[in-house]
Image (tube, rainbow, N blue to C red; front, side, top):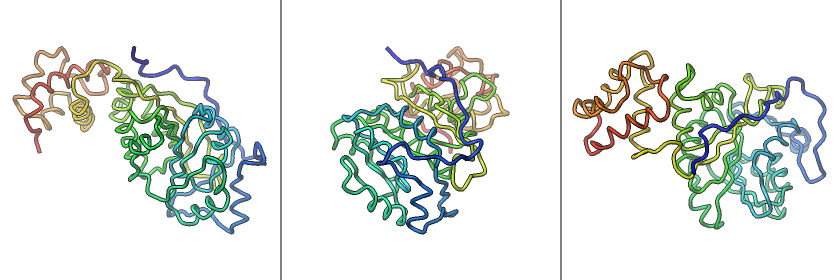
Length: 309
């Protein structure tokens, strides 16, 4: 039985409207302000660094991960280790992925020796999640605050490795979260949301305001949870063709499906759509997941034919 495409959202709550003096929730967790002072560090604009300092945000993220001592969490962009320490407090094993030298030094000094802690100094875009899951012998929980510049490629990398993941809990810019969660067929429907919701159940965990960070960024953020489905949200012959169709349909939003798809697919492929049951005079944002599936299933019969350059 497939899970619903979008879980009903829990009541969202805004975080960080006003920055208050916050105390860590326990002696084993780390505080960003104290670490920056101790090591004489400051946020680096070139790395897009903004350090989370709000305990409610941390609590919401850890709760969404649903970790037990038997689980393995992979934290992308571990930074100063503030979230890492809270994940470790659940008893789970935590693989912290970080590539910035100063951050890695803090992680080693503060967390080396903690039960379950592993540091991987590498670019998250090069992380082999299926191999890591195989090494640990279980599905992984993926968690992290994704840098804006590489958030989209990271999300698609996670989706490609979804069979190795039990849960994905990520903080992204609120605008991107809105796109990711927009229901297919709605006015705000978009390529990112349609592709994610075909393979994951989605939910917004909470909103995170600018004041929850040090220094405050120029945008608000959201924490979202993606739960990989055992299959696809609706029956589908070929997921690769589905991705091609979705990207083409939204590549030129003002155009009808017929014009948008014909810019990518051959005349013979377009002819195969004449009896698929979807009106090609519509636009991509009006289609439900099931209708995108009808289009891609019709085209998958002719998959061996190359798409247009």
